[in-house]
Every structure is written in C-alpha cells, then in structure tokens.
Image (tube, rainbow, N blue to C red):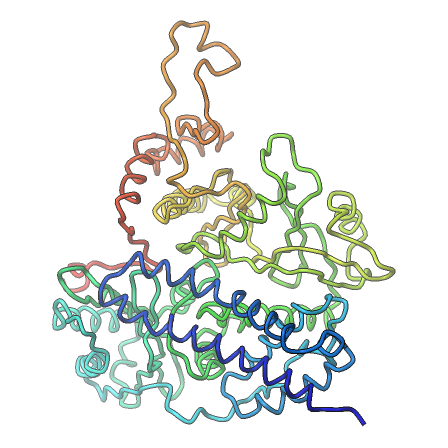
Length: 576
C-alpha cells in the first residue's frame, strides 16, 4: 500500500509556495492605486518589471526548498507524483484561484523533471477545474440603472470611484462622458428603462492610466465599456475617454500591451466577465493581460493540443520573407507563429544565439505600448511528425538541427517562442489599395515613434519585420536587433571633403558600433519610390538625427511620454 504522507507533504509545500507568490503578487498589484495617485511613473515601470520577474524567482525558491527538505530518492521518484497531484487536487478544490495553482504546480514539476516526463498522471496537462464556476462569495461588479438619467448614473459611478487626489473638473468630465456615451449608442438605448451599466468593482491600472471596465446592456443587447482616467500632475484626475466599441476595447486589452494591475480575488470570475464583453479574445490572452502570463501560457498550450487533436491541420512555413536569424512556422487554422533560432545566421547579422535570446526576453519586461507582440517562451514542445508538412519539417531540420530533433515519429522543438500571427507589412501593402497603403504606412511611422517614446529602438525597421493585426494596427515582431533608444548614437552624415569621397563605395567617415544615420533610412526602408515619398510626407522627421536626439534627451531627463491605447476625442469636440 503506497505511503501517501510524503506525497501530501510535498503537495502542501508546493501550495505554500504558491500562497507566498500570490501574496507578493497582490502586494505589488495593490500598490498600483497609490502609484497612480502620486504620479510615480518611473515606479510604475519598475513595479511592472518586478511583478513579471516574481514568478520565476518564487519557483526557484520553492524548488530549492523542496530539494533541501526532501530526500532526492523521494522527491525525484516520478512514480510518486501521481500521489502528489492527487493530494494537491484535494487541497486546491476549495480555492477561488485554483486554476492558477494548477499552473504553479506544473511549473514546480517542470523545474524538477525532464519534459519527457510530462503527462496528465504527473501534472495538469489538462485542467481538473470545472468549466462553470460557482459564484464568488463577494460581489465582483457594481450595477447602475440610469432610468433615463445618464448624467446621474455617471455621477454615481464617479462617486464610487474616488481617489485620494481629487478630480480636476468632474462636472466638465461628466458632460464629456455623457455626450460620448450618447454618440456611441443608438438613441433608443439611452432611453431604455431597463438599461444597465455594470462595472467590475476594481479599477485596472497600466502605465499612466486607470480604467473602469464593464459593459452596458439592455434585455437584448450589450456593449463593452471602458472609461479611461488620467492623472494630470498638479491638476488632478481627469476622465479622458469613454469607449464602447468592441474593437477599441479589445485593443486596450491587446497582446501588444503591458499587463494591467488589478485587484482580483477570484481570477476565473473576472476572466469570465471579460470574456462575456470581449468574446473575440481567447482566455489565454485575457489571463495574460492582467499579469497571469504563466497561466495564459497554460491556456494557450491546452488550446494548441486540443486543436491538433481535433483538426486536420499541419505545420507549414509562415508566409513572408525568410528570416536571417529566426525560422518561423505556423498552423493555418491556429492564429499563432512559432519562432526558432537558426543554427547559422546571415553574415550581415552581428549577433549570436545568446544575444537573440536576451533580446526576446527583454520584450517581456519593457512597455510594449501596443506596438510589440507579446511572446511566450517554450521548451521541448513534442508534436507528432504527421502534423508537419514534409517541406516544412525538412526546412526546420536543415536550418535548426540543434533545436528541431526527430525522435521516431515525434518532432521535438527544444526551444521556441510563440507570437500572434499577423500579415507581414511588406505583403500587406503589395495588395492594398492606395488608401490602405497610406493608412498602413502612417501607422507604421506611428509604431516607430511610439516605440521610441517607450525608449525602444527596433534596429531593423524593414517593413517585413512589422505585421498588420486584425484591427489594422501595425506591430513590430522581430526582436533580434532591438535595443534601448538611449543606447543608440544618432548622427548626421558628415559632408564629404572632396567629390571622390562622396563617390566612394565605402563611407568617408568613421562609424561606431552604435552609430545610426537616419538620413540613410529612406533608401534602406523603401525600394518603392512612391512609398518612400509618401512616408517622407507622413513622418519625414524620422529621417533626421535631431528628432531622435531630442527624444533621447526627454527620456534621459526622466520624462515618461504619453502613449494612449485608444483614440482620444478632445473636450472641445465633444462639448461643442
């Protein structure tokens, strides 16, 4: 008869580590309100990075504690772990963050064992949590019933959402928001006696903004709702925008943005609430958007293996120009690309494997300002060989033999990143109308500017390294040359001393390793003369060293530049 006591002790130690992680996560998250009220913009960025790092730090601590507490012949006996899992299930059943605790258990297991030991007997490949949850014991939302008086309903909302810092001009903002609401909804909706505004009880914080999130609904219809708040230093809090368009609210929760800080006692309840108002979002993306990126990774993996099990879909090479550093493949029916590092890089790339890994991990910790795709890093993916198109598998084995390995009928991907699949910008403009080309190039320029405002220089800014999302936004996704903007030395090209220098195929001036000459961008970025001229008209300042140097000065002085995840409408436009 097996001895269940050691298994239960190991399970309890794992769960105690999870509680420690959750407490530290809560402390960082709960400080968001004070940081917003005190306009501590630098501290907000630091807290965001600290919270991302927290998970791996706590996993490492628990792993070490287990190794020190339990004999290796016990702890590393994989045959005992089904008992550990069984004991753990009993311990987490009463919890309201139980889905997160399953992911935590998986992380601890994977820190102790090789990935070929992963199976549902030892860990939670599939969740054991119920699909439908019982209601949380405390109300998660607040409801407001206008009964024809939108102004009063909005006033009640702001009465319930006061800060230690006062509102700059609340009456002005209420009129502003009421008009935006009336402009956004059919007139009959605003008069519907059954109209209800339902908001999640906790505010969401990110960067320099705070958000009230919920929905507006009648008996037959609903709209998502986000109210954006700003803190204008020295002036007070300002209600900046009210958004009811599903696409725009979806962009606020985009995979291209930093993670929200929001007090959530019962994560599954909140994710269900968000899923109800943003049905186009996968739950993996929603968990990730509020900082539970490891559980988002679990949900992504479960969706992937479910797709492979139920859909006759094969991996193919991703459309677009082949990368010089990364090889990219995809599943046509699954909206994701898989990126692996090649064994050999193009001679023009002055990076090595370790540097590429460092760059991709850097993206997780910086403010992506809606312009860089989030990534998830995986090790030892195992897929049936039958799920690969033969040409795709042959190419992967040729260019990345150290990463892609055949073990019988199984393809092992030793290391990869996943990203949301987008249409490469260079492919998009080939078939776009003139108006679409102009809009895409304008947004391409805005993407470069907003990344720069967040102290990110893309390095290789070719159109093939940017993608177009389903909402038409241009997003950067190739990270092997990114760096902090303040690390770059932007220079003007010196004048040639005599004609022979200017005609030379080699530069007549010295070039340091971090030197960048924006005057060279037009010819480098645009082979198409028409596109070059159009972009120069839209964003020609990007071709001057002065633009970049002034931005560097602002960042070095400690300024955190505003980048808004929604379209702003001036008060004067709304209240005219």
